[in-house]
Image 1 (cartoon, rainbow, N blue to C red):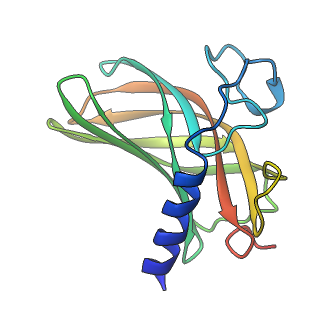
Image 2: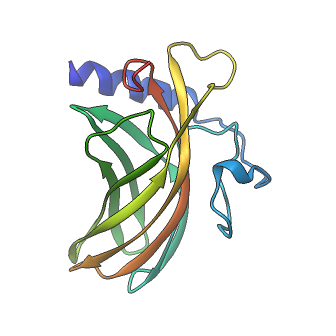
Image 3: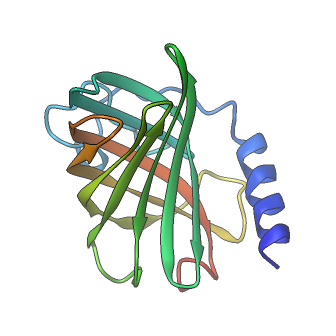
Amino acid sequence: MRGRFVIVVALVILAVTGCKSGDGDDEANGPEGTSDPISSDEVNRYQLTLSGDVDLDHTGGLLCSVDDGVLSLDFGIDAYDGPINYTATVPNFDPANSALEGTFALNDASGTSEGPVEMTFSIGDPPEGYEGVVRAAGVITGSTAGDAGSANINGSYACFLMHSEAGL
């Protein structure tokens, strides 16, 4: 079943790779002070700023999923001197809760760093023409420490979730 879900999500991601870029005017879906908040019509996108030992400002594609009650946001990129992968996970995910707490993990060639994150979460309508999905969006803040370095985290995200995943 999970394999089918991943295929469906991958197809949805392929369908939206032509998303228009946001103009940064939609403050409801981006944190105050973030350099490039996600606009209300974007999906499967994120903007994250990490500052500290790990210092980056990145906007890219995003994969969101809910499996066994755990919300996962996978911010995988190839950047700089090698691959960097970072994820946020929220155990006991409840789509009715707009304030979520979870863990942020950063993995690179040096190792792994983890730390707590707080996320806002809201469900909205997807762009016209998309059926069976909702647009989930919010902001993420927190910190991470470990072998991959220490950093403060600040950003925003927007992604598709299937109605069944979002608890609808």
